[in-house]
Image 1 (tube, rainbow over the protein chains, first blue to last red):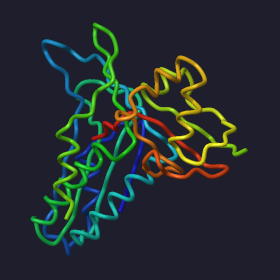
Image 2: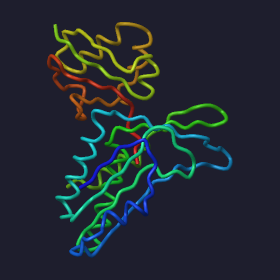
Image 3: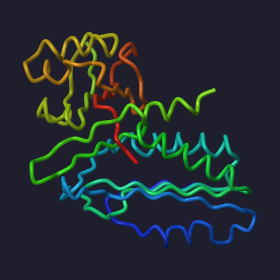
Image 4: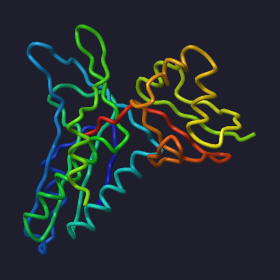
Length: 149
Length: 84
């Protein structure tokens, strides 16, 4: 299980090839990558991601451990960037490797839901009008609740 | 008195104007620590004015306001997280 919290950019395709090389016991690979989004009517020039260095990796590992156990994953990868990012940049990626696709899809969604509101990252958008912290959304909490029980 | 390492992130950090500080306190819980900090100055009062929109970590784990704090603990205050 690999967890990387880094300022440096990464290329999802390269990471994915490395991730599942030599794993012939796996029948399913699912990956997701989050990208910095801008809006034509309200352009974002830059996204700054702050994190809590002492806690971030530990929090992500706890989420990964739960996903691995719950869906019996063969392997799992999480990369999340911090610092200054620009529209089109890859913010983060998750990849899950399992025997069958059901587990790989579900675990990837679980990881995304928890990374969104349980890993200590905060996004700030820089626009022509100024800077603003991105608010968490009610739906993000609801997304967490659906995994309980 | 306990010594507690307090950390602030995102808009909590900006409102207080510090990313962290060493605090001497008699507080037994995070909630009591918040009461002490709020009484300090306007900028703390402002940062802690809406407790429902704050999250707390004690020793790098998410906790609630009623969590006990011990000497040497690291207590962090921040808004809801926006990762992913």
